[in-house]
Picture 1 (spheres, rainbow, N blue to C red):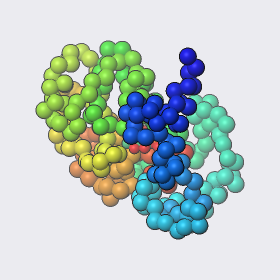
Picture 2: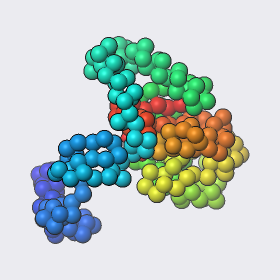
Picture 3: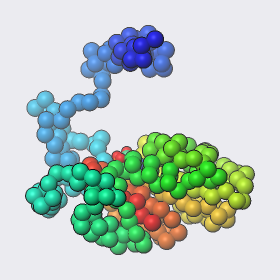
Amino acid sequence: MDLFEKCRAFFTDPDAARVMGYPMSPREAQKLGMYPFFIPLDETDGTEVTINDQRLIMIGSNNYLGLTAHPAVRRAAREAIDKYGTSCTGSRFLNGTLELHTELEERLARFLGKEKALVFSTGYQTNLGVISALVGREDVIIADKEDHASIIDGARMALGRLLRFRHNDMDDLERILQGIPAKAGKLVVVDGVFSMSGEVAPLPDIVALCRKYGARLLVDDAHGVGVTGRGRGTAAQFGLTDEVDLILGTFSKAFASDCSSHDLI
Ligand SMILES: Cc1ncc(COP(=O)(O)O)c(C=O)c1O
């Protein structure tokens, strides 16, 4: 069996696509002009784009504040490239930390009201790095069923067990917390603003349950930071910045840069 065959079949064979649970193959969707993926933008100002000479309003992106087009942001990016070049060509541990990174981390921590901030290359990598580093063999990750994929991938990389509770269901979260042995380290992980529905996690209830059962709390606020809580995110919106142990934000959304994220401790 050729490993690649299923990919070819999915793209071109309507029956194969249907067996996989899709209403039609991508090729059929393309023919009907209904394939929404990988459409190249000729130009983008953030909130407006050009596709095939047509000017369109972009309502599908995460450029919530339109900052990718802001002159000060563009100028700062140009100045950084002039000074440092286009890559660190090394890991943060060894030769890849610039003084610009440490300044950014200090300013982020101050802005968000946390003790420390750590910048990763992307939001996805922040979840992979933080969850897999913190959660050891005897520990447990307790994640909302609608958490972002990067949280689940981080949990898969971690040595500990992953348990999932029904979306925003506090009774189910408590049921799961009750069943975990007291000696296990516990990390509850939720999206602050859920990426697919835009729903907000009930942080006051979640914080109370974490306190009751001795669990730490990570809020993935990729869609909240820059937008809610006067830019400080969902925890700030609820007045709970001090009670949330770890807050994840990302530069790939409101903060207008594709190549770094921050995790706050
Ligand atoms: C909730 C959530 N967490 C993490 C990420 C990953 O962020 P990034 O795109 O910066 O890797 C996303 C991106 O879609 C997200 O929606």
